[in-house]
Image (cartoon, rainbow, N blue to C red; front, side, top):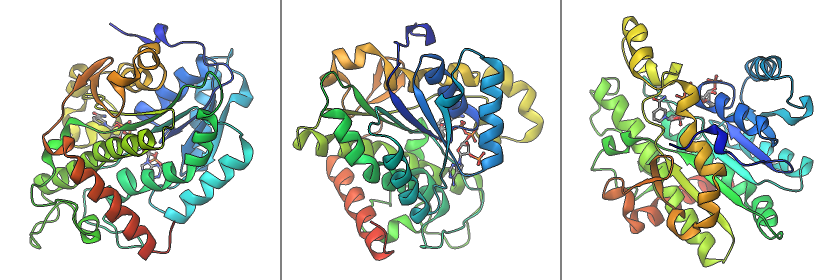
Length: 318
Ligand SMILES: NC(=O)c1ccc[n+]([C@@H]2O[C@H](COP(=O)([O-])OP(=O)(O)OC[C@H]3O[C@@H](n4cnc5c(N)ncnc54)[C@H](OP(=O)(O)O)[C@@H]3O)[C@@H](O)[C@H]2O)c1
C-alpha cells in the first residue's frame, strides 16, 4: 500500500494547493512541505490560512517557515483568481505541482456575480480559470530539463450523480447544472445532483486538458481522483450532525484521505509510466478507475471546455 513515506524528495519544487487551509488540502500541504517543496496554500480567508500555516509549523519545526505561503484565492470570484495567478507568476519562475483541491456542495441554490451556480463555480469554473491562467508558468517549468509537472484535480465518485439531462451543451448548463425542476432546489437529491455535475466536470476538464497538452506536445501530466469518504468538515457535512462520532470511525482520516492526491502529485510511478496515468481518474493510489461512461466521453469534455470559455468570455474574464 502506497503511503506518505513513498513521497520523493521535493526540494526545489514549487506547489500550489487550493483549499489548503482545511481537510484533505491541509494534509496535502503538510506532506508536500515535509518533503521539501515550497508550498503555496490557496485560501480565501487570511485568518484561516494563517491558522493552518501556524498549526503545521508548530507541529513540524523542521519545515522552513518560508516554505508555506498563503496565496489569497477565492474560487467563486474569477477576477480574484486571475489576480492570484498573476501574483504567483510574478513571485515564482516555476510551478511543478498544481492541486485543484478546494470543493463545496452548496446546500442552497445560489449564483455568483457572473450568474454561475455556486458549486460548479467554485469546483469547476474557478479551477478552470486558475489552471488556464497558470498554464504559461506550468509550461515554462515543463520545458526545463528533468521537469515533472503535474496538474491534479480532485473529483469524487459522486460524479455519477450528475443529472443525465445536463450535457454541458450551452453556457446555461453552468448556471443551473443540477436541476430543471423549479420546485426543488434544496432537497438532498438536488444538492448531490449539483455536486455531481461539478465533479463530473472535474474529470472531463482533466481529460480535455491532457488532450490539449498532448496535442501541443507539452510535458505535463494531468490527473483526477476520488479521495474516498474522508472525515473532514466537508465530507461529514452531507450527513446529519449527530452521526459525526460514528462517521469519524468509519470514514478515512484526512491524513489517509490525502494519500491519493499525494500519489497523483508526486509518485515516481506516474513519472515512470506517463502513458498509463495521463488524464486518468484514480480511486486509490495507483488504481485507475474508468469512471462513469459520461466521464470518458471526449465530445462532452470538449463541449464543457468550450462552454466554460464562452461563459467566461461573456462575463469579461479570460
Ligand atoms: N471528504 C470527502 O469525503 C470527499 C469525498 C470525495 C471528494 N472530496 C473532494 O475533496 C476535496 C477536499 O474536500 P474536503 O473534504 O477536504 O473539504 P473541506 O474540509 O470542506 O475543505 C474544503 C476546502 O475548500 C475551501 N474552499 C471552499 N470554498 C472556497 C472558495 N470559494 N475559494 C477558495 N477555497 C474555498 C475551504 O476553505 P474555507 O475554509 O474558506 O471554506 C476549504 O479549505 C473537495 O474537492 C471535495 O469535493 C471529498
